[in-house]
Image (cartoon, rainbow, N blue to C red):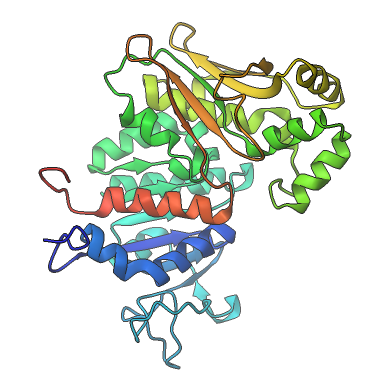
Length: 362
């Protein structure tokens, strides 16, 4: 049997997408264009059953064909994978309480792409907890409620027999969470060193090349690397957040209880970056944690030497080094930092929780 075909009849899986910004749109578009190929390869047909955004909600027709016959991001009627945007928000209906949407759609997965902001933290947490307790798996790129409700989410998943996957929250397409959760299991990992924020790495390299901080940030924005407000990237808080989540997966820490110490990329970093470059070093914003110092994550500007995987990063690349004394260091690097990169990570996580468990090499 070809490895392109794992099941004669792929199992259906209805997905409720919460959040329809750039990442949510990229997720929906990828399912529309590649859903059939994913079904053939992985044995599960992911169907976008509802899209929720703030107070509005849209339910694509089950066959992917709206009343006017135009393909939507359900399964296209012509089978070609043609993408067309959803109707304008004015054509959406009011959002039901999430419980009603889950019941109406029979959803097996809730995918969260809502902003990681204090304003939506409580709602994101409440919806994730509700879904998990009802046996609905949660795939999320939203960080805020992971940091504030880590233990509660774990208990809710245990009560409902459901799964949580957070790849999109720990480095877009970089599969760092997969290694932390399962890839280094049993290898005795004692530490992590990470550059999980591509904006900080890019800006530090531009500073080393002689740019001013404002010019380096402007170039990062021009290339689509930096957000309009890069303060979380440059302060070290975003790197610290991602390291907190990875450490929680690795060592069973409560992410909400992890303390952080951060050092910012500021005007003073320009001098340090140029001084490091003069001796063939590179300044990096390194997030680190060790099992020997429980519940502490540090982000420091470090001079990295040739041979260090963090030294080798260029542009907005990211990397995490898992320190396993007996097995040796294990490094994962690369992965696109973009809405599409984050969306692909969430598609991967959705397949992980929704695809039928396979035997043998599966």
